[in-house]
Image 1: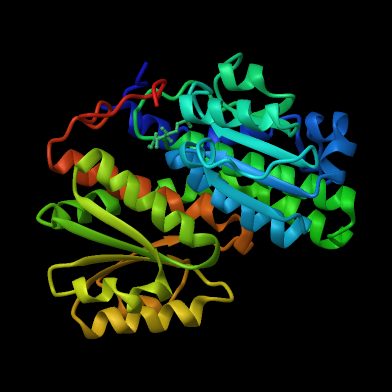
Image 2 (image 1 turned 90 degrees about the vertical axis):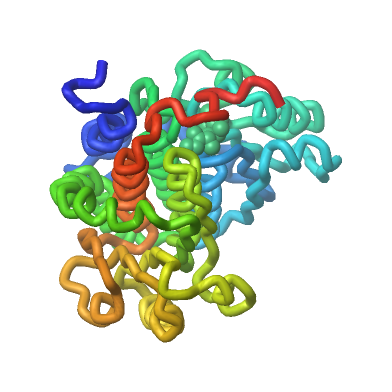
Length: 366
Ligand code: F6R
């Protein structure tokens, strides 16, 4: 049940530290700093010899795939393509037996994602499922896979499944990088340790939910929102915008922050809320200058920043702090305040948070 929370969505947001520990249990060994995924052990040759990975999914799971691509390419040096399942299945893609196609799906029942892997399989690709629902159609249709093990997700807006998917993609990346020798021992151990600490870090963010709840009502007037991030936080901007759209019915767009000046900045005026995801990483200065551009046009700026931030904070109307973590794991932290802000805005607007209009939990028709 809802465990004392008013909605499943907020329960599931608060469940994240615990379920991510479940997701990593038996896989991430914090003592010896090692990650073992049975799918990688059992299907090592197939995975290591692949010429290319294709990650296919829909919606929030597609956003997790975008993060997976950046992790796999930067750490494991594997070329990765990300495909909307609904597009992939109908565009006669080039697929060979040298490809591994990953289907990412919370429900494991999404019709387009299932059809995409059936197509890929018929052309000889090896299929790897990343699902939550045990025994679901996609997990059964896959050659191998890794469950995210975050427990049933009831709220229509996906929250803990997203962080679970990103955590599995992170574990997969580190396992493959270790096997391929694309990572030093020292960095591998450091990243294993960082990943193992993510649940504690999310717990810290959740403690600030009261502050987020307070600022939410000041945004209920808005008809539009812009979400901006770069690098690993660009997919987080897309996910933040999707969360807001689906449960509050406020129109929102996510963009890579630097794309703003190629069009969307025309929308900015003193009424436009602009959410920046701006933790301390190598792109910080770049994002800071994007923030200054929005400030000069009087946008209302809400920034997600690293603990102790000063420069972005100085230009922001509101900030939410997250702990410092290696940039590859930032999405696991920065998405949490965005889940909370959409939840509290939707509640302040009196929306049906767990059952938004026009949406179904699993999309079993195309
Ligand atoms: C958004 C949301 C949807 C799903 C999408 C894919 O909050 O829940 O965008 O992510 O329908 O669903 P699964 O992961 O079950 O394939």
